[in-house]
Length: 437
Ligand SMILES: *[C@@H]1O[C@H](CO)[C@@H](O)[C@H](O)[C@H]1NC(C)=O
Ligand SMILES: *[C@@H]1O[C@H](CO)[C@@H](O)[C@H](O)[C@H]1NC(C)=O
Ligand SMILES: *[C@@H]1O[C@H](CO)[C@@H](O)[C@H](O)[C@H]1NC(C)=O
Ligand SMILES: *[C@@H]1O[C@H](CO)[C@@H](O)[C@H](O)[C@H]1NC(C)=O
Image 1 (cartoon, rainbow, N blue to C red):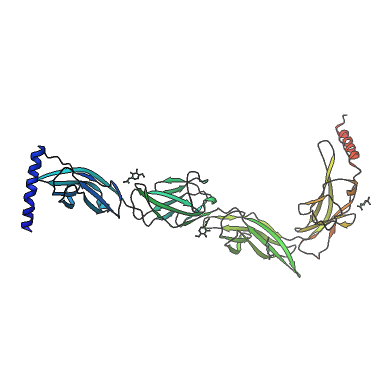
Image 2: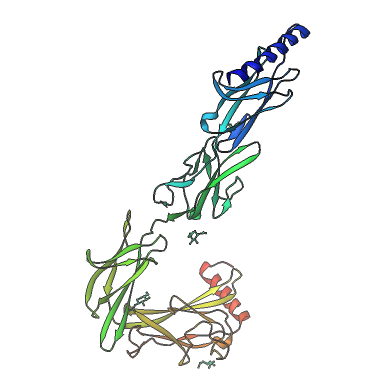
């Protein structure tokens, strides 16, 4: 070992002194090439070469002016010295190369290497957590990579990238996706990608999807009450429902302010409760209450009162005219003085009119131009011709008792004598009370 080094040393000295003699001042400037930006993980190579120098040449790669990373010798001359290094976060720094030949040492240019750590283990975290937000509240999703430097982020909503042209407004702040006031449209699956790039090469780490649920506040519950008769007993049915809101909700039946029954509605916003009713007896005042984790709403009251149909039934006729005094339609109203659940039907010249406004085409209606309104409380003659002239009556019975007795009104005569004549009648009538012509 000792001997060989000594043997090598002599020619080195000889060449060096020869070079010095030829050029006067020795100037072989080594040139270092290598990356200034690299991903951590793979190897990169720094290369150093000095031209116009007689071998042997010793090349050394120096980091931050003090640490020697590698050493290479060129015995032939003109050979490029390679320094492969495995990039880690600690590889970041300033590199230069040192060449020694013929007793002279020269320093290369320096290269500042920046290291980019590719992202990994990316996931979405939400605020609130779990990702269930009420409409109108704020939502913040974060894209968190366990590792990675100099990261950029992309967001996806239902697998589509969120861009400025996405119809829903989003804000991007660093690694966060923000929505100031969520609406039900923001419900869906979110994911993100964290990425960094080096010289056009992208390294991406994508998260799994997070399903965001947007809850809608429940609206004030509504209440309705109906009655059915089975054999000789009566059942009351109190139905409660909210028109909007997100299930599940708890629905309660309150009777005179006391909770008497409850149901958890998991899929819907409605529930019904059976109550005992006795006709003619006041069974109290019912209300519905709907409760969620943050809401408690009560409906208007409804009296659980079942009064059978009775008393007087009468028909009132009202004629409707156009602006130029043409008789167009007539509205017949049926007034039942007593009864909470009346079922009304109409008769014309003692024939029962079909109870639907638009009977199917197979059965010819007795009167072609009629319509019902307000659950048959009103009968509208939509076109008036002599055909519609005749006696109109209405009758009522309890809707919950198919076999119950009818209470009938007196017949009301509607007479249509042709449109021209009617218009003239109308004008005459109009002029008389004003007293001018
Ligand atoms: C980080 O990324 C930004 C923008 O993508 C770029 O301008 C910058 O040079 C990068 N820095 C590093 C160390 O990669
Ligand atoms: C979101 O993901 C869940 C399960 O991963 C799926 O059931 C649901 O249909 C998705 N929703 C949308 C809007 O894609
Ligand atoms: C009570 O009424 C609701 C609708 O208002 C109906 O869906 C339900 O079937 C009724 N229940 C009974 C027992 O009649
Ligand atoms: C209804 O009765 C009135 C009066 O009796 C009569 O003038 C009219 O022709 C009858 N209409 C029909 C369609 O039977």
